[in-house]
Length: 238
Ligand code: ADP
Ligand code: MG
Image (cartoon, rainbow, N blue to C red; front, side):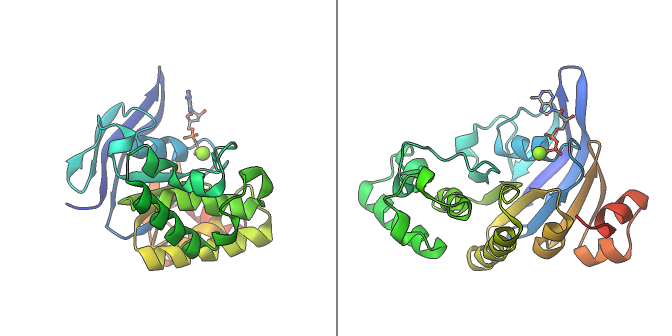
């Protein structure tokens, strides 16, 4: 079974269980949005897929390969964070190139890859700048560039737009959608913003207190919410 498959995934922090055996199957090229209130386990779930948190129980596979014990760098996933996590002492080109450099990709190949990614994201004229000399939107583009440049099988986004103002957020949302159309990479996107979920998702996964309440297309959830929680969450304004 290709794609990303979570089977009975459990996460405990010590005695505290925060993810309660979730099942989720994400098809290749699908854009799935994980929504739910703060503290419901969205980031934890994403971080387990990335390999940044250990999996307490259950099985994670990506394209049929069990990933539970595979190191993050060997998972072929790339994550984009809310706080960008750029290296302040490196310029834009070096930030984008970082993941390739540590994987010992040849220099000429890196140069071309950085150029191509900068072109796609409209960063060509900013390649020599430090992150501190960029706007929030540009920083987020660099963070995406760093993910894209490796051609991962899976993109993971953890509230990537929540530090941006409303106007930029709308613009970047459109940009992420365009990128997904163009690159067709399987994407798992975490947000607590219903509008973002409704506009970006092929399917939405509604989480609450470490369980999945419902999985469906935006229209499914809007028209046929499984329960009051889903109805309230999808129906109410952000
Ligand atoms: P969300 O991303 O949906 O806001 P998280 O996945 O960050 O939620 O957190 C889920 C729950 O796990 C919360 O109750 C949070 O306090 C707890 N949690 C997250 N990380 C840790 C950690 N490193 N140690 C202990 N508890 C944690
Ligand atoms: Mg979170």
